[in-house]
Length: 426
Image 1: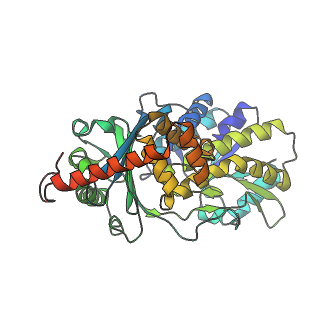
Image 2: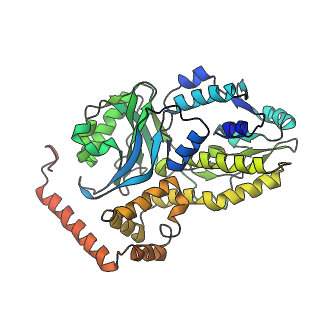
Image 3: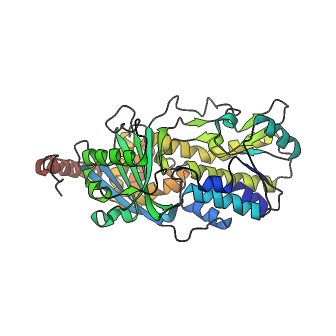
């Protein structure tokens, strides 16, 4: 996106890729990378919206699940602007061809530190956006902005089709399944390279917990079989939807883990020249709140506007100042993600519970995926959360009443649930 924005502003752009268009299109599965409203609009503004047939996610249904196979309550509300998830193999391959067609000088091959030296000597600015380990190691971790020292979740993703929408109509839009302390599952409407409309299922398991069972998976079919078993055991209300599903392709799956990190935005090369880092190269979040591609898009937009408005030189100090300015708002994506990775605070539990009764509150929560700064301060501070609920006409007695109703629902589910070996009671 940064290349497209700078080309639009009349800049001469050189773009280096370690893969050809054909390589990118033939690659194995990549992260789901769902873009939310503002970022979808910016992509369209740059003329990079090539998939009008792709399914849009217009609302989110969240189930807060219990440890004994039940659903405590659900939150369901529309998004203020539609979200969009397109296979990155399609996006990267088409994007590379497009910016080349618009005048960028495209070169293909692995970029080394020596290459960065040559590029920095011949260009006004060099930007590193890829998460290539050899290049990201040039950017030092920021000890003040880094929070975690180890991965917080074990991850598994698989793209599927053939599911049963009739068994679970909620899946016509986005569905989130949360079993606190154990697993989060995201069922995202997706445009797949091979089958078109599909669902990308992203699972985040607490390390060592009941859902941490994908480490030995070696294929999409094997991973989907493990996922189906996990759903039958922990989220049986999703079993009928998932049971007939099959992978969109043998390569459309991923497993692994992510260590969240924030790096200093400018790296100084041995010659004394410098390069700027953006996207995953300098801000890498756990995918729990879907902020990776959204953060990268926000950074591209911010820096494109700043670079065009300033006549240079683009010194290391000036670039660092601009990143710090971006961080004043960008940090909320990290705070949102870190807040969801941690055990839910009492205030956040009450916010989500209130959202199950008040669609307006739910819409405000969902807007956090699009613009995490919109959650400040009420999502991040306990006192501000209570003030926010009060402004929404939700008092302490209302919250108590909601909790009692949830307790009664959970007890009722336990009393009337059939044995695990039989179909779940409804």
